[in-house]
Length: 423
Ligand code: DOR
Image 1 (cartoon, protein in one colour):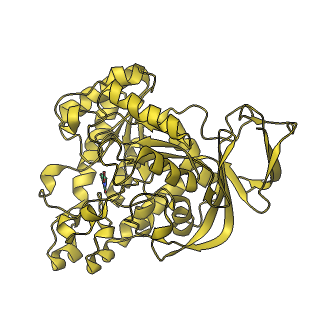
Image 2 (cartoon, helix red, strand yellow):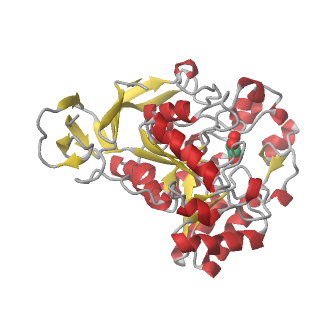
């Protein structure tokens, strides 16, 4: 049914009504027989796009499913998510990618776009079926072994060469496994030393970023650096961009607001890979988001069952929830980022990096993916109010600025006044 969204401040600028026709597309004339959605006082942005989501299906449906993760995405204002390949089985074939894609369509709340593994079984040795995944109906364009670094330089070079054939990109989990022990669980620094926790030094990330921008230059291909977490990585990406190298980068909401000091409480909620870093790194990440060195915010939404997370710090699973709170965390962490910039880093740029047509703008003629945000609300996060199946929420009890009020996906209201509209 046609829709009129009334009174929103479009990209935080001029106030205008938005019109959606029966086909779910934005149009420039009021459609006949439309429902209305009151957006008075709200900011309208293009539906958000997440480059980095763990949905856990297939394999760990106790932690999240494609449906429950889609619900969390809709609540967070998303219209598309890229589902990481580290499921069980791994998304390393066209069949596996199509299964994720089709389950996403069935859930019908956001576009679920599968990320293909770079290597078979994420084992780092043999390339996965990159071409078959790309040519399948799922049109996979982003490839990542996320959770693991593609450590072998020869494999990374081949992957970069291969994805050029179909305009793909390799999203790298930059972390040299030889620069940290197998039990690394936090940032290596003064605090980890004092607490006796084994850590990853920032340099383990930076050497891979440096290597991979050079491989991208050599192959004239595109590399995307997932969850950049250190000032040194930012410096490297800034340099590579200035050389015209095909590199893009993302930062997570948690790396923009949380620091390694949280380790002191030994609370595994804050155990994440890459780890929380010192305040100097957080400052550099914020600055890089503001100046465009970092292209996108991506959640790394990583749901985990209680029995995997509630352990001694060294033994607990890595990762934290992120979809429902991402926009508010970004607003809280980087208040200088204007609404048009939020739209750029949380929708337009991720859509462009992922090659997702029909996302990233509020242009007439495109599918009506719209998020409506209350810019002045302050919300205290309650982990038990989450629609995710998991509860590893680092924002529980925190007060965040701004609130996603309504989400519209392909012209259909999926969230109304903060509540999911079925399914
Ligand atoms: O914290 C993380 N969790 N980092 C990763 O790289 C993987 C992710 C997961 O799958 O849980």
